[in-house]
Image (cartoon, rainbow, N blue to C red; front, side):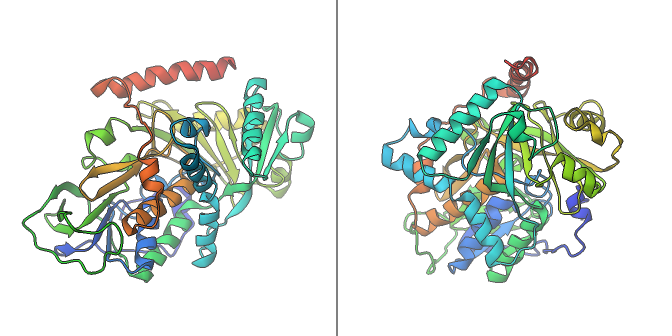
Length: 444
């Protein structure tokens, strides 16, 4: 079994285990990727009586869903006007409303399936200088005008002092309806629920090829959604030589979907490496000083810091984005220095674990929904904003197959530009992001 070297895996004794496939499989819907998106889609479809097979190339939790910072953020990952200006007003409203349901959907799944994942609410979007604070106030005004009433502006250091013990920020926006979780516990809970509902889940089942198999006869009687007339059967080839046949395929691997995505997908997604450090448990006195309400925090820089206090009193501190996907230098040293820059009191703290993983970003930081062939659907590029949005996206994919929602069709119309540079896009992206990091440093 893959060594999941995050602190999350170390604290879970009862990890669910799923078999590798031992023969060829046939199903109505095949899902590639066992993270939040794929698992939520599998759960939703299985709950509605569909025949689902989910395959994970490694083990459940080995990708971004089991290794992220655990931040549960409301809404979309960019200013809403980037979406609304591309759509008619009624469709833009539907997308806005969907984004505002993302956290509620997560909460409902936790409650319905009794998932113990240390869900806690309270979130601070922190401003390092006045321009960032003005951006947060504009965000508050936009969201409140649309009926979201969970935001409170902490627009000076005095009002901020009751929430966070640092002089690093000039202000913040507090969101009472965002928060944080232990992400691997949440993912395991989804996996158990999906399996119990009838979804077939397989680990160590990497897909090497996806092709149409028109010569394979298959009779579907269970599909109630988009219909199977005229839709050819798909054949998924696995690394061990086995095959899976399915009428529909959902591509949910995001930054870890390597050789299966079409050029339309791969050219519009850039994998970025982010790293996380966990300290040993801090004293209650220290926690009450630095984060008395234990809210999660993210600053407003492009190459941001994000952090929280977990249920055991550890600081979980993330950042140090690498746009080359190569972790140069000493990751632990760099993350600890970032942490101490915010909280000098943590200079003597001990490190319990350090780990890294990939996230997928799009040019506009909005998730990219689309079709990759006849009966093949995908979503990718949550841009570091995915714990809640992935669950929404998995639900949208499932509902699209079941014919129960317009959201997939609307979101698929959004324009997503390819990253420039072709095969040089990774160094081009790294060069471009160096400019934004310099802007962050100069506070421009």
